[in-house]
Image (cartoon, rainbow, N blue to C red; front, side, top):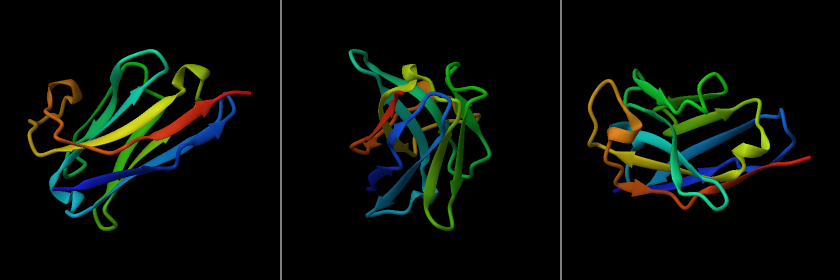
Length: 126
């Protein structure tokens, strides 16, 4: 089973960009769909985006559409989440998750996410 590790979080000003990455040890990510989730202060965990194992199918939360882009590079074994036009409302801990249990086209909320990373903090502030 994969041990997922997120990276790329940090402090950014409103309107700025960040690129988060999800990688794994213990297993290849090639066989897994990868989801990105976040937990904002005082709120529950919510879907951000997800991508199928081949990269051919993606899904986004409404808040992410047009600003965030999920992609994957199965050669290097990494899934990226490009965050653009960030606002303070995007401040959260961002998690990646993996699953083999999903259908196409992928829908993040309908998939069963089995493996989780520990998260990376994204803070958007002046």
